[in-house]
Length: 463
Image (cartoon, rainbow, N blue to C red):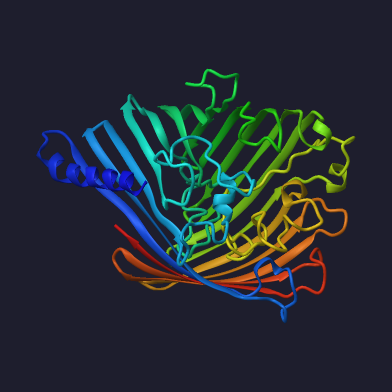
């Protein structure tokens, strides 16, 4: 298996030396290497402070992106995630991290939704082909084809963070195989895409077993900002992926974003989506189920040179989990959630802390609690932050967040968190970030529960 990776890297090196000699083809390389040390005092906030067992560990991850430009309007990108692993483990199953858990669809075992990770059938190889795509600029837009990743929402200078506190409500780390077309006509931008999430009826010639996603979008831009809208339809017939969850799914999701620039310093945004559809032969006695769910986020940020501050309110609707406990009552509401890389708070939205995003295997996690997991409870999120550049190379950060369940028959108060962070640029291409989060469990947790401290130090090299 490692031979395949070696062959790929060797091929890239050969191209690096041979392509400069070509008349119209250039090669550029970019990427990063990140090494992070963690210290967690009470993962999942499941026990009292006296009984808590702290966790201290190191992880590393790297990515490399090769761009081969065949002309001013045509290029190919090839990207790799390398050595995404926890130190000291023979594979990457040590913590069953949230990110991998999403790809596993919470099944507890590695899952390959399409044969894109270099032909390997698990994630223990520490490598994954993340990008292999062509971009062709046509008229005032482009045609995009291959494997890649959706970009950030890019709400002006909003939502970005120099201290590891990403506030992009719908940011997603998923990779996908797709065809996309994008064109601009005056103030209007139109786009359409077809993505293949899973394929199992191609060469086998079996019955319908695809999982596809279709998206249309439009955006109107002026000096004051922009308004955009989109519509997505997902058609899931891949029962081989989630046999424990459902048979057939048809889901429809309209969405909208409004971004306003009030002068040079004030930025406001509002975004939301509503989803509806149906699941055939789903949970709880194989009953057919309706899909209904919505989310909304309102943000304001003041950005002026060395200073950046803002506030946010976000909500994903929930359903009383007691309605899901009998086979006679099908699920009518499917709760939504923010994107996988939404990290406004270091602990509550941390990948290892076991709070809002806890994998199934973690003892004492929300998933293993007696209450239905948060995907059906929904989330109410109240948040404020301030960033300040103390000197040319140093940014500092403070944030306060309060979280509630949108629906829970026992208690809605999830907890409060206070954060401090800093990022120092050691030299060009090398930076050090330190992130501290202190989570105080709310009354939703069964007392007595100890508080949770999150501390990490992240060394990042970019090239």
